[in-house]
Length: 282
Image 1 (cartoon, one colour):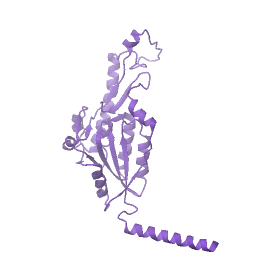
Image 2 (image 1 turned 30 degrees about the vertical axis):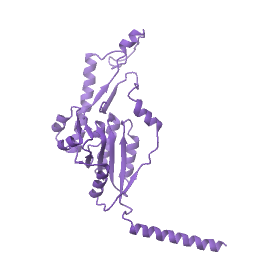
Image 3 (image 1 turned 45 degrees about the vertical axis):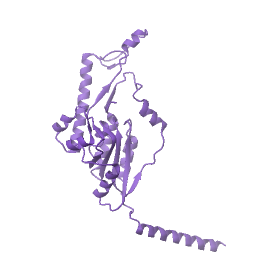
Image 4 (image 1 turned 45 degrees about the horizontal axis):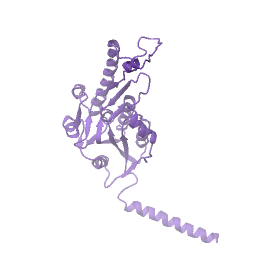
């Protein structure tokens, strides 16, 4: 009985191996003809997952190119900068093609700028190259309800941009200096990524938005097209014939991420409620 089972097991394995070989020989897609698709959607609050994905595909020899699908108004400065850095590192090793969706503005454009090529729909909203700070002044409200904040601090500006009072002249100058410095970093990043003169980028970096068509005329993107066009472009750039195999991360529903994207802007994160963003306001 054991001999019969071993015989049929051997036949099964043999047939499976032959079938696999024939499938690979007749398939239009070879083992190495893979393109990774990474999606960046919604407000950029955390870079960890996207950075991890980019590193994974950059180091995978079977992945020939990466398509970064961006549909985002931007978000926090540091996560946007971290994603930008990973894209910049990756283009030195592999082709990265950005496909812009309905919205790829501010931080969404920032992370796109170092890509090998940027493709957007003619109606895509992009640009918004700028930085914004937000704070809330609850002083008048607290006074009306009879609540007063008592502050003990070790430095003159330790309670800078407090929720419970306005921003003084000197404080505004300090905050504006920080804002201008971060704005300069944004302009430098775009100038480097798009290989454009700093002054030319600065002339467009006043926070205004552009359609994909306008962005093409300004040199902020390379082509007009869809996500499928971006995938085809990436395949052509690395010499893939026929339809490439698309590899993408399995999307899991995250209630935490959903709630973060929806209500992050409604509630202050800390006492000063001071937030610095590469983000288009809407």
